[in-house]
Length: 189
Image (cartoon, rainbow, N blue to C red; front, side, top):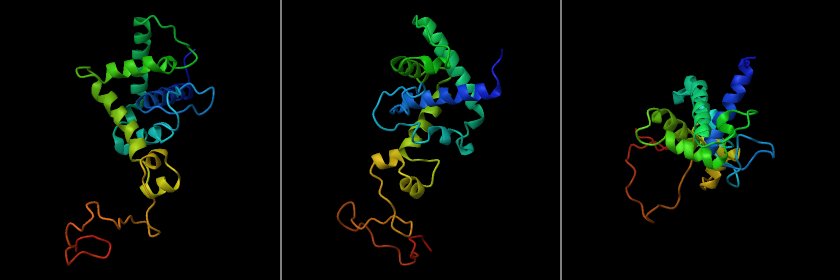
């Protein structure tokens, strides 16, 4: 019996979550979570919204995600055979790989000279971006919602009007006077 579209989509989501978790690991969401390996404490790329970012059309990778998930699972099956690993077939092949093998496979796929490197590096970059910058969200809203990556990096909330101001200068002195035509919002006239 062939998998339904829903099954294929679900497998793709699990696979992409497992990839993002390999790039920036986090804690399992529940004891039976298979996509998140639980290789780190606290939130990782998945909780930070990696799949939301990957599914944002501006990334340019959205249309290719089902194919990347299929290719990743094919690579995982080949890797498992090469290393004599027996994978649980209740989940996609990449999800079934133990975390150390996931990382080894991703290292292979992103290595210089790998013919598919560009696609895998793009997925890795977007996984990091979801955590480091919450690129799929408005920054003030992400901070207000408690985005784990921004909080971990110490982003502070904006002033009540939604703007960030920095009353202390980074070099403890004003580096330049504002141009006389600068508007009150800080934009050049």
